[in-house]
Image (tube, rainbow, N blue to C red; front, top):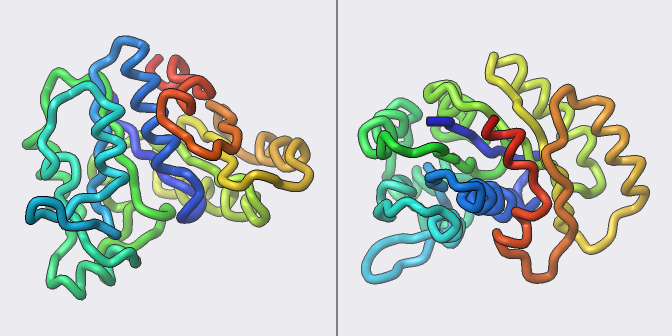
Length: 226
């Protein structure tokens, strides 16, 4: 089983859309794939349980039947930083407990388990751990989604340095355009390609109504699954 962690340069940069696109592309290529959301804030109550739109989007893109609690074990209502939402709800988040959850509950016959983080690389899980600790615990390969907007070069370079420093493999990055327009697009892409020592796995244009199938067409899933 290949295990992949999708992180982003910031929040609200289209990370879930890209992660769902990767899941969809892998399904189309004939793999058994599960999209997973370990921690989600900004949930709503449906039939008495908290559920998250991002987690449901990942579930719809995959082709493995998992219950919601397996996909998203930590569901929090306020749309705020997860560790703060967890504190308000009296919930404890632990990288070790999350690792144990997925080790016990994921089917052995998966070809790809794709985990989507929340926000950026160093978003806290608790007072001592961040999403980096979760990725380290499961020894996940990493794909970085770069939100193409003003400031993305600095955010991308800092995130790449952090991923490299902790010893995980950054297997590639994806340029996603969350905004309809951006100045000097080609110059920004060129700068990122020169400074990120990892393959560019796709350039996803801005879409007014994005869906995973459309996004998948812009992604190089063969490079990830090879």
